[in-house]
Length: 397
Ligand code: ATP
Ligand code: MG
Image (cartoon, rainbow, N blue to C red):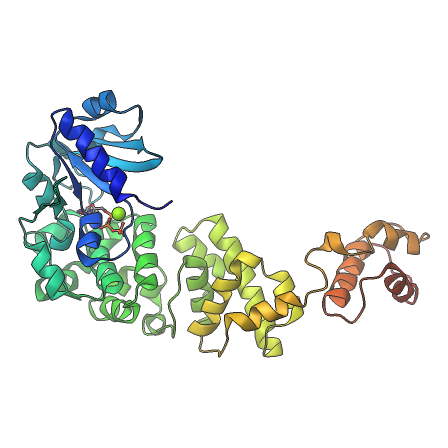
């Protein structure tokens, strides 16, 4: 879904009409100023969650304790959060206390970087107490307040600094650099899933090479799963962006096969979907390397929605490949799934009426499937039947 600035401004009007201050805040303001595509549009308001709920019809309380509700408005979703600050992070995870505050200025002061600490009013005016706009034009990532303190409160901000540097191709300030260098070990307190989100964005950023370099030189890698134990992986720089963890781990596994895909999935707490995708990519890569090209079998086996990801992995590894090459091979496929075979398991069983059922059936079907896909055999019943009749009777087991 595409964020709608127009709807966001309407939503601000409704809040203002009801007597509450409201602003677009954070990443959306940054991206508007930069003229870059926006992610989600977040809104900060003086209204309490209850007050927000009384104004709009479709409100989902997603984080009432933190003052956040999701408002469905003109078929768009907006996170609307009451002005707040956060105090004390004794567990490095959640603030001990969330305090609601009276002004947008105070709300902005809890935010991580100056470029993320701007607010936009319905009039279009920008509230920018930390000179975020200036830092945007100077292309720097600067902490709001003292970087050491802010990273100590929430060590994830160190990962975020590097991911914004990569996404925006900005530099981090010397203070931020020093604070990360001194406190990188605090990352061990952060839930891996949260680090995964930031690392994925880092690797997808235009400036990922600089991002990797920062992770290396500032010692961040020493506290990231797997990288911490593999110095050589820390210095491995993909030749192309990798947009997603399946691609990432397929790539790194290729560089260091001793670390299994399963270990990546476990240590980085990746989802089953990512795991499945990584295995598909890995098998495709094995086939590719064996034949030195995209084969019919490869194109048949790889789920279509992973073809882009596969090309990325090949490019990252330095293979000269083009999307068109893949599309061309796909277009030549005689069948796209086993259902399309004109010879099915029942036909195979009938060809050997005296053999008890067993694993030979699925093995036989695989053989037929492979022969048809790779065009050694046409997908005609009689041709396949003729071929199968020449087989030695399979041993049942
Ligand atoms: P993206 O475009 O990738 O979503 P973003 O800046 O919107 O980037 P989010 O993670 O969506 O990042 O967070 C929204 C805003 O909340 C940030 O711009 C920042 O102001 C604030 N924020 C998020 N995470 C933190 C944090 N760990 N510490 C302080 N402020 C944060
Ligand atoms: Mg965002």
